[in-house]
Image 1 (tube, rainbow, N blue to C red):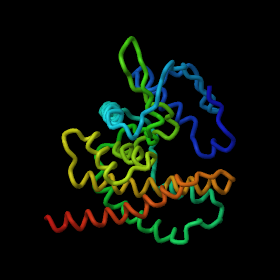
Image 2: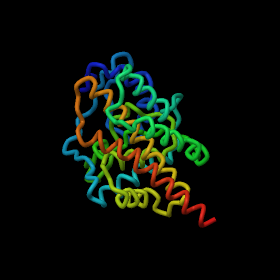
Image 3: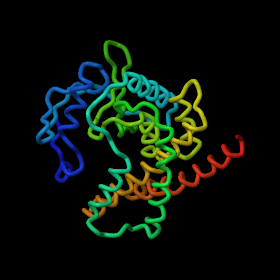
Image 4: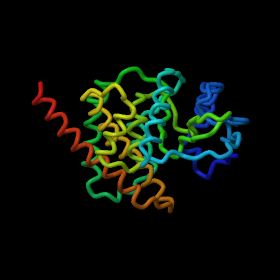
Length: 255
C-alpha cells in the first residue's frame, strides 16, 4: 500500500496518475492495482512474490528491459496530459522560492540546456504514453506460471512525450558513462539508431539531468540530501550539452 509522503501532492497530479493506470489496466504492463484514489493518492497493489529489480550493470537484464520498454512504446497508448520536461524544469526551480542554486554556473548551464530545445523539437516523432521514470528500480522481473515477465511500476510522472525520453531517464538514474549510454541505446534500437536520434537522446540526457538536479535542489531546501546523485545529474546537464555540440559539429562535417 502507498500512502503519499508530505509535500508530494505539490509534485504529482494524482488525477493524471489515476488516468494513466486506467489506460494501461489489463495490458499486463504494470503491477496489478487493486485500488487507487485520485484525490489523495492512496494506492493498493498486488504483492509480487519473488520479484527483483533490473540490475543496470547486467547487460542481459538491460536488453530484456529495453525490449519490454520498446514493446510498451509500440502500443502507442494515449492520455490527455503531457509531461513537459522544460516546463517541469521551471516548475521545480520556482519551488526554490528565490533561494539561489548551489551551482555558481547554474544560469549558464540552464541557458545551454534551453538552447537544445529547438533540436529536440525538430526531431520528435509521434508522442505516446511515456513512463518518464523508467529507471532500473521500476522494472520488476517476476515469475508467472513458470515464465519470466517484466512489469513496469510507479507511473506517477507518466504522460504523453517522445518515448526516447525513457531511454535517457534510464541512463541518468543508472549514472551511466557515455559508453554505457551508447550500449543502452543499442539495446533499445536493435535495428540501429540514426545519428540524429542518438543526438536527440543526448539532448534529453542534458535536459533531464537539469530537471532532476532542480528537483534535488528543491528537496535539499527541505532538508533532504541526495549526495552524489544530485551532483551527477547536474554534470549530465553540462557534459551532454558539450557532447551534443561535438556531435553536431561532426554531423556538419559529414554532410
